[in-house]
Image 1 (cartoon, rainbow, N blue to C red):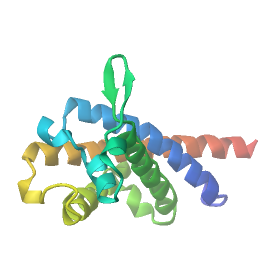
Image 2: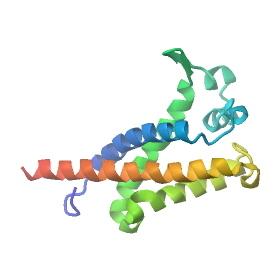
Image 3: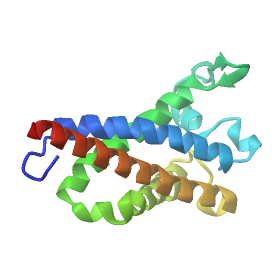
Length: 169
């Protein structure tokens, strides 16, 4: 989408798609560099957040089985919802505030990490205070958020370009 024919609806759809794709990347990242200890993973931040909202543990810890693994579907709803939402926010706001594209989204990812993992989640007691989190958690989450938003940037750029080319025809 060029500056002349920017469509917020298209940007939201593209951002949502990018957020789903980048959400898969972030899950893969966390398999390579797990941010939390096995003990802290027993109730992960999305599950803890849902419990803080009053959702019972039987839902927050509900799973489905795939290939013998218990997969936490409720956590995935929060994970992909967060990712799609920020994909949409980035897709729209970076059009109006191009500086947000600095570092191809990686600086935006650092900002999201800082605001959520160092600010809001500790303040809400969803995760421990920053000083009480292991260094490995900070490293995994920081780098993971940079990679996550870079993927959002690339997918949004490519889909926007493809839509722009289609609209030229």
